[in-house]
Image (cartoon, rainbow, N blue to C red):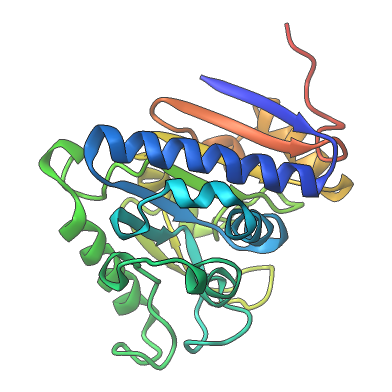
Length: 251
């Protein structure tokens, strides 16, 4: 099931998504003992985390029973301001009582694998596999929510139109020659993203309107990767009014 929810502007969007996350995480923890999220970067993704940090409702979450993963990462040294992890830590992670063992950043350049992105991707795939349960299929955990931004070219994570990563069959792939700098990245693949119970695509601003329209209008995922992601139970496009300008009319 795919739904579209439109908010007046980015600030309201970020606050609403933060509130929705509190509900999903607390429900998952009540039902299964823990919850699992996949984070995204970008302006909206970071704004959501900052809104969650500022919300009194964050106290409802048992942060020690929350697993955090990333959908993609720029292959840069740890602490680089361009890394999604760096932004997430500043916006939220450094302000809540997480269990460090349950925070799973993607490998960084200069880490145990040096500059070998293929080994770094394989390392993250192994970490995902180790956290998966037999009921999950044994490859990646059944994430409760995958958060995804969408680019003006309709890319999600670091899956760009027409690039080999779109055809990757494992759970994690390295990306070279990305059209958006930096060119070297690590990303979850379509199969890994589709393992989530819910996928939420976040977009704000008129610059995202065409991409959102294409994704919801049945475009080929090879040309508009956002059209190729879906949660097992639900897919939501959470938008501000400007980004929703070209959403196809229902019916």
